[in-house]
Length: 411
Ligand code: NIG
Ligand code: FE
Image 1 (tube, protein in one colour):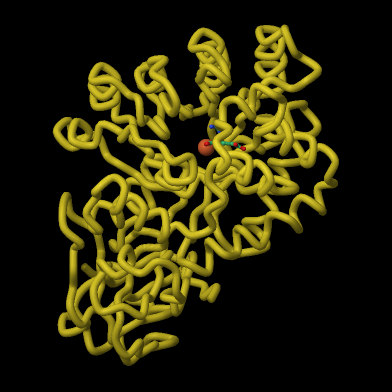
Image 2: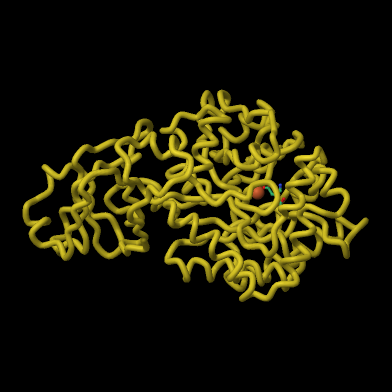
């Protein structure tokens, strides 16, 4: 529990709260009356206060008595499209009158209307529009945030989005991981030439990667997106660059997306409502995480549930993310996504917390976070709750009392 090889004083020590370490195959990993110590941005003590050496308490640079509540790992939102300009409230109204997401997309609205607004915005304007959404997530406990491109759909505008995403990390003190989603929709200038557009995407990817802007590669494999063959070409380009892939897979129909992502050793297959047993098996065999996006399920009033029992039976880790985007999931709270996962998908609150921490970190290929463990990054949240299930029970509310990333207090 304590790193005994380092006698230097702790930078910080939090006491007076319970810990949900999640540092076990199952369960919250609860520690009543716990203590959490950190040094140089890394956890150096995790365990009961009673086992803390007296010298650690006496010598710590700062001791914080929390006076109750729970500490969890910092939350990880592993799937968002939160950098965009404009909004799609009018599309929301259209859908409530019965028009489907797909027919709006086919008529040139949907993603393409956000592309138009995003192309028209400068990088600074994009940052200003997106920062409040990221701040809302952080202030509700998120310390690691994935952000996709995909509303630029040309080299300069995809670059602008990825740069804005990086700046969010610096502005808010959180980790931002960027995913290139050039293959999100067909831009108007390529109508009738989708293979030519995929050529362009495969040409931009190495350039953006060389600029340090890409951590992973994603595509929208769907009837209104790109075919499995086109997705495969994007993935082959990613593989040649050593970049991990993930996929918008089997959201509206089963095109075998989850199995395709798994075949490429994908970090995750996301949405997965229509994934078949073959897809689940492939994910299990390749360690691909199922990222559940209950916000989109809720907003689109979907009824087809992901194959949850099969994921459980095959030990496919399930993560939960907001999918924060202006169309299908204008959701700015990962806790609310956890709650929706419980209500719509019948996840237990423990599965939901695991899905927003340790399994979400895995969906980003990050092994240094998502649990409270000596040696992990000192990313953690102090919540004013008396049981971890409250994180899913309350819809909204101000529960995150303190948020730390890398040992630094952000909130
Ligand atoms: O994850 N399905 C594709 N992409 C997003 C929606 C993007 C949008 O509608 O702007 C999703 O649901
Ligand atoms: Fe998405």
